[in-house]
Amino acid sequence: MRNIFTIFRKEFFRVMSDRRLVFTAIILPGLAIYIMYTFIGTAIGGEVEDIVEHKMIIYTENMPTDFQNFVYAQNINPEFHDYDPNNHEEIEEQILIGEVDMIIIFSETFEDDIDNLVISEIFIYFNPGEKYSNYAYGQMTNVISTYGTIIGLDRHGDSYYAFMVDSGIIMDEEKAAGQGFAMLLPMLIIMFLFSGAMSIGPDSIAGENERGTIATLLITPVKRSEIAIGKVLSLTAVSMMSATSSFIGIMFSLPNLMGGAGAELDVFIYGVGDITILFSVLLATVLVIVGLVSVLSAYAKTIKEAGMLIMPFYFVSIGLGISSMFSGEASSELWVYFMPIYSSVNLIIAVLTFDISLTAYLITIGTSLIYVTIFVFILTRLFQSEKIMFQK
Image (cartoon, rainbow, N blue to C red; front, side, top):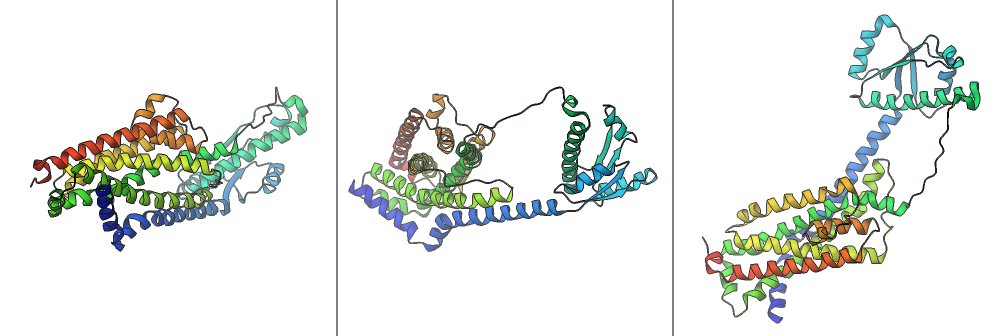
């Protein structure tokens, strides 16, 4: 145990004593995420504000005065112009280039049709490829639908409807907010856990092999299993610090990102128990990732080769994280929680959506410890192989 701690301390302080490595591996991930997501949220918010404040340029024909007054009473910003059929192609060209937003043509008998309960046609020309035109279409179709309902009820009373639908919302607001996090965070968390391990793992093992310093370590009177465990633990500690930095950056930047998109998410809906469970899942996951990265780094001759061997597993892990974006719910199948990485993705979703299962949690933690034990055993065998450790 003493030798394991010695190896751990040596590897840990090798990283922590390098200011540039501390900044790039631990501080920079969280800082970069916060700056990037805040910038994206601000940009999205500015774009949404620009679209909302844009004055809609709309050409109309046979538009009823009552409808025009109704539109002006809404919280939109239209500018109406009279439509001339002789200039239709010219106006279409203006819609294509974004100078005009849409054309609305009402039937000449629009008012009479409403009085006689006859379906009246309204033709709308717009350009879905232009952001202003597309937004104007959505706004005006809603206004037209609302106007049709109001004027129909006003002129014909309840007989205007064959039936009416009322509704009530039954929703757990915290779980709904958690599902918003569950669609984004698992992929990001797994990605940054892997990135943290990749940034230091290859240099710690393949790098020492490439520089020839691993030979000095292997001839010391220290069991190679202790060297393997010490390196895995030190890499886990640094990777966890990197992942924590990334996690903090994500949590503090998400309100800015979602706020820019017009959504409101409260990141402080989780209690100490939820955070503790989530942290233990992250720790178990990073142990598995570090174990895998260590084995691949030990097998590689150089840092470059180690990076190439790790990359396919990195892409697979991202793919597993992306799978959460389409469901937003944790799997109820227990066999899922025996799979490395994928079990962590589902358990993270379960924590974020307040749907944690004790059985799934215990299986994930237990199997993660089994996997890391297997990786440490393989790493020890690799360290004991002179052919692998001293390959050129």
